[in-house]
Length: 317
Ligand SMILES: [Zn+2]
Picture 1 (cartoon, rainbow, N blue to C red):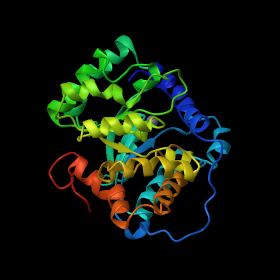
Picture 2: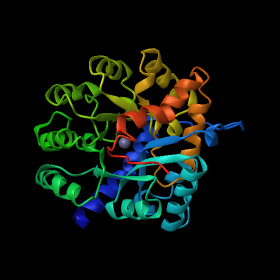
Picture 3: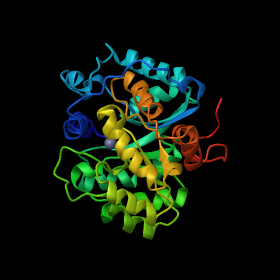
Picture 4: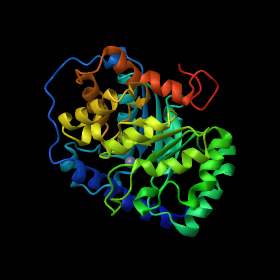
């Protein structure tokens, strides 16, 4: 990717989180100490990021409620510490390609390399980027496509410009994670239902809707009802929303009968503690049975990504 694209996407990525926090949150939940069972679990994080500390201006720390580590190395090692501490055996990681590579080198069996479609890529640059997918895949540069951030540019999933990506993913059986959720841009008409056309055209596509289409719960439920192959992740809302709100949203999905298609995601960016907090929110959801928690933390993602079936995520230590 060109340097200018990087800089552009960094800037927008900062806004990505700010908008997520602004739109969905005016209060960060403060957790009362309670026992975490997570250490006894196996977890898959389907939505982790490898970003530079410069991705966000310093004041965002206050909004997020965390202080970022002092260096890039500390960010990486503390993020990986969290993976180890909470037995997160796989983490689908996207961000700046060089940094994703560094994470992979630091924890080769846990980190699954995601390829993001960065914010700010449109027109010819997006075309060129998407045309490179087959080559980058052959070179082993990614295992999963995502996070696809085209919503920020107002590009809907059914836009013809994305067709080469969907076709390639379906043909090679590569999972795709697409951001459908809060943004800082005016994409108010944007809903999970924009995936319908793509799913009709590509019935064998493995795709998950990141952020579970928040806050468009009705549309999300409709899409999942009509297309049983669609999975979602809970990333961002778990640490970005007051826990009552994320519980409410999660409960709607579970009550609609989708507990076996919801996956855990942290959306960790530059605050490693957000992984831990995201896990706590699921643990605290008293309306979930123990089995449903296990589904969300691990089983659903293991099925979706095909762990042990020689598909993208490979083996577990
Ligand atoms: Zn996102």
